[in-house]
Amino acid sequence: MAQYETHEHDVIVIGAGGAGLRAAIEAAAGSVSVGLITKSLLGKAHTVMAEGGVAAALANVDERDNWRVHFADTMRGGQYLNNWRMAELHAKEAPDRVKELEAWGALFDRTSDGRILQRQFGGHRYPRLAHVGDRTGLEMIRTLQDHGIHQSIEVYMEHTVIRLLKDGGRIAGALAYERERGRFKLFRARAVVLATGGIGRAYKITSNSWEYTGDGHALAYDAGALLIDMEFVQFHPTGMVWPPSVRGILVTEGVRGEGGVLRNKHGKRFMFDDIPENYRAQTAASEEEGWRYTQGDRDARRPPELLTRDHVARCIMREVREGRGSPHGGVFLDIAWIRERLPNAAEHIKRKLPSMYHQFKQLGDIDITKEPMEVGPTTHYMMGGIRVDGDTQMSDVPGLFAAGECGAGLHGANRLGGNSLSDLLVFGKRAGEHAASYAKQARPAQADAGEIEQAIHDALAPFERGGAEGPYQVQQQLEETMQDLVGIVRREHEMVEALARIEDYKRRARQCSVCGHREYNNGWHTALDLSSLLTVAEAITRSALERKESRGAQFRDEYPAKDDRYGGFNVGVRKSAAGSMHIERLPLPPLRDDLKQIIEEMK
Image (cartoon, rainbow, N blue to C red; front, top):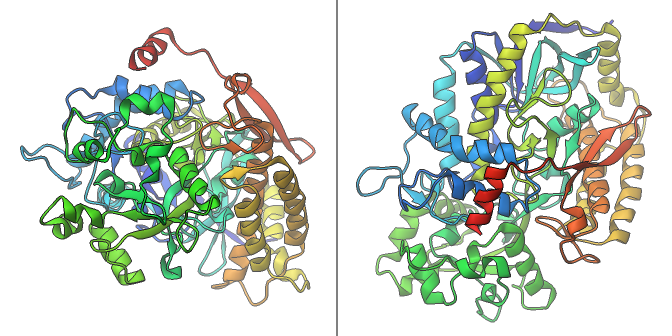
């Protein structure tokens, strides 16, 4: 019999980023016992890397903004594949969640009259992002943690969940192991909230931290939950490509929001060459007009560098493919040029973008106040994930909830910058609230002892194998395959080849061995992460093959245009009874008439 400790809570929250902390706080407010499990240390969540701000229609900078405009912007950015109920709730509730965060101690930047300052970001019609310099995510985590430690939440740091447990069809808890010592822990619970973040480590070049191995997506999939929109992986257009010491690190969209411009190797500002027709009326026709916009001129139009992320990323790749890129396969992002316009430009940049300045100066010896950065697209965000009810955030597995990046629906085919942080707050709160309500009315659940034994046996199997190959080689090759064959520009024959490789990686992963013991064993951790990475890689590839069009973050080389036949459904992914991956088309529910009218008015 395997040895494991047992802990009991009404609600278990897996993940301690913005969504997980907010869910745990709200669940605890519902007078239930809450356990918070985090793969890393508390305070190390990937949310701290979110720099630009929280999108909320506070209308502090431009009084024309309101929830209706925010809703329409979100739907348009998502190419109308969004869960419209989630988009509505998000736009309506984001301002209250930001004010709540402020009441809990968040120190936002201020307007001259003392209100929360808001900056412009790609895809948003008006300045909408409440920010703390370029350290907004860090301030969010600090505030949520400072508030959460007083809420009687039991925190389990450096624990990785390897299996969700069920009692019949409903959730009964989770099995995890302690990363430091390798000891197994059983968490009995009536409700589980997944808030595990994204899948970026499935790709070679990513802005994501080491924790982002698709754990929540894979856990839900294995538990029988439906995943949707897995083809929509957002490649942030501006990740560093040179020098190697900073490759993949994100350059916040706030750099472009403060006046940064994109140039090719000839010094040409190429984003003016390709402005989509549906954005033409909102986009600056000249450099002068774009500059005036970044300086707060309400009558000017936004610069083309602030178009949606998928469009900017494709424009960058066009310059690279056609030989106009930078020496290391990117383009140049230049904010130092504003010295021509502002006498105190260097101090302005350091004040507005302190993390960007210090990070690249220390890590790459690049002074962004004097020289351009060499940037290119980097895997950044997953729009797809667990399908949830828009109001409650519960999946189609009773008792299993999801919030944040591992939940799907709000962003549709493409996420607008800044919507991720308000997503965490709005739906983290809702997930915690409804998980607590569910736990109160649910009968006690009992996990199957045989299932627990099998899960532990499977987790320890790499120690028993005598294979010559370790997990690192398989993970590295998987990352390269996804980067090369299922990246920004997708081709059918390449994705078919990727699927064949993934099948081979799955076979090799089942034979991988690790040496040593269970304490401090990174090889073992990687072997266990591989299962999740392979699941999400296959789901991304099969979903991308199913959608034979280009829409949002998905660009199919053979089908470069949107196709109306594909605009009426989400691609769903579910584990079949035989254990294989099943793809299905899920028709979108009809848009409510009043919301349809808002979209028409905003056009």
